[in-house]
Each structure stands twice: as structure tokens, then as C-alpha cells.
Image 1 (cartoon, rainbow, N blue to C red):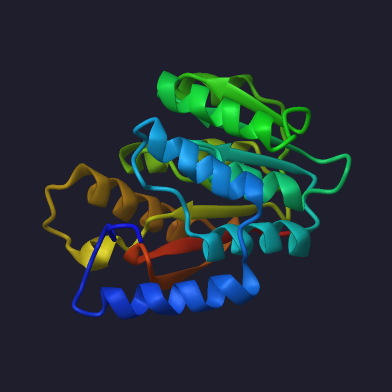
Image 2 (cartoon, rainbow, N blue to C red):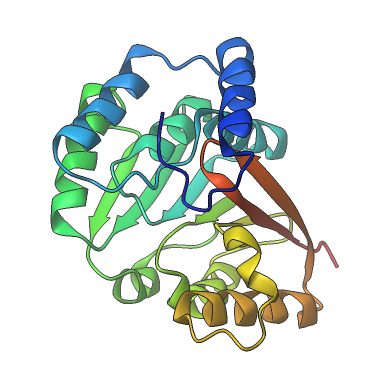
Length: 227
């Protein structure tokens, strides 16, 4: 059982409920289990999405009928595998990872999952790579350093089209998102990210708080309007 990022007195119960639902609704296949084991064995931080969250991303892809997906922040490729498996046969996912070691581990995991032909992994700073990508993408998952989330949002919009889904992870941070006086650059980055979304007339958005094995956190989900 992972140590939650934002624990509470109910963390054990949350994790047990996550496990109960995961067993029934999001069982991890061998490639996903292998990816997590490889990540742990090579010292990667346990910031991966949970199995239920990975399944949620895969369902979003299917609901939106996404063909081209962009992921900002690969880590060890666990979420990448969930999303790549949900794509149609002609689909593809472009993913970006700044940390060279994390990118190498992700490459191993993606290769072992048999998804190398469907995934393009870019190694380097997202803000250097994003301007080189061809638009549009159908779904964009932002899960990298939160300080730069406002800049990632700007690029996500540039690389979108009407109907594109944009998802930001780790946006609640144990409730710290509402602390206007926070000196945490991750919190200030996320607060600006949310404010930008709320003020942008091109976007329709909502937020979902989550509790589970990762503690208390959540997602912001936006869509580019059709008008």
C-alpha cells in the first residue's frame, strides 16, 4: 500500500475502498503491475495515478473518441500505458518527461507493454518540446511540475481544437489549493492555472475532488468549447 501524498485519519479506509473498487473495476494487467514494480525497483517516486484514476483516463479517451493524446509528465509510464491501451488501433500518444532516468524507465515499461509503436516519448523540458508538436490533440493530460501549469495550459489550448479535453492532475493537494497566502510555488502555480481556466471564455470546466490510496487530491477537467 502506497504512502498517501496527503494523508488524514481516514487514509487507511480510503485506501481500502480504492482497493475494493480497483479489484472489481480496474484490475491491473501484467504490464501495469510490471511497470509499477520496475518504477519502484529503479527508485522512482510513487506519484503515479492510482489504478482507478488510470481507468478513468482510459474511459475519458473512449468517451471523447480521442485518437491523438498528449501527456505532459510521463514519470514511469504507468498512466501512459493506461491511456495508450484505450486508444483505437490508429491512435497515438505523445508523452513528455524532463527527468532522463524517469524517461528511460518509462521507455522500458512502454516497450514491455508492447506499446512502443503507439507511444512517442520526448525527453526534455516540456516548454522546449511543446512548440515543436503538431496540433491538434484530442485529449491532453497535464501531470508535471505544477509551477509551470499556467504555461502548460497556454500550450494545451494552442494544441487543441473544439472538443479537446484538458485534464489537470493533483489540483487539490490536501486542500491547500484554497490557501491564498501559500508560499508553496506548486500551490500558487495551480491557483493561477485554475484562475486562467475560469476566466477563459473558450473553456468549460469543472473540478473533482478525490480520496483514496493517494490521500486527498483531485482533478480539473476542461473542454474547448465548440463556439
